[in-house]
Image (cartoon, rainbow, N blue to C red; front, side):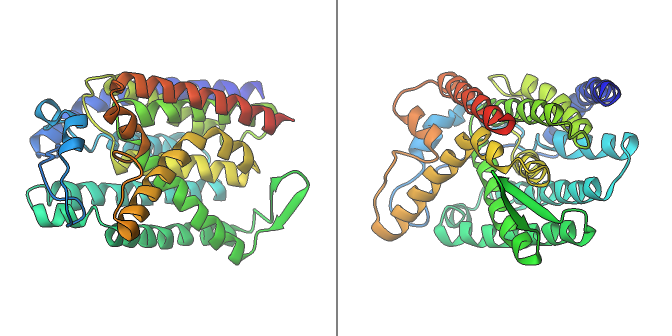
Length: 342
């Protein structure tokens, strides 16, 4: 145990240094190639109403022009350090495939659909519709099914123990079901990335909690990976302190959402994971409720969704929303640790 913890700490420090060197270069690169936010007034979902409230919450008069592909820090540094320093077991190989795959999908989403159409009002409105979001979700589910079937093909994971004495054989059908659930985990992470420091702070707490849980359980294989991720998150949060020097977007949020779910799944810590990450699922649920209500009932449940924006619309400063969500995550992580250990 001492050796794996020592190696993990070494990788954490190396990850911090590598990220601190890469981040300013990345930011300069994003400015140079105009990969920055440009939120403009547009219709909501092609129907009545516009995004004026959202623009007010986001303070677009001062934040437009912020690089919105900062998640490249996560997408680039984690796999590179892992490939250089870690023994690539089959489980870690599948992890890295999924991590990079969803990072690239998040990158395409930002570069093509967000930045590529920032001046196209009709396309921006369409991207807010139920149909567009559903289409993206279905495509992402198929990506995740591929990853989970790769995991099944390794033959290493024979059974899953999601809760108590319940044991489920890891068949292809179960792999597909896991992929669907896992995709919602990824989507919840992406939706959480909506305020300076919100997503990255929440996932730092989750990363530390899962790492501690695995150390106590003597499940060491993914401790080095979690250490690398934590090192990147430290620098990421440094640059996300308001006013953020960059926003993470899909290239950072999607891989982190995938990583936490995948590690929890193969280490039989799904229930602790759901507790630890519950705030992100609440955020996703609030967005889902709003989308369905607007689509089928033409009514808003929240002033604006996801729910962290609803609180901002009710007058909470962004820092208050972020810090209180961090505190909720800390509490749920303590609860998750309790369940995982006992």
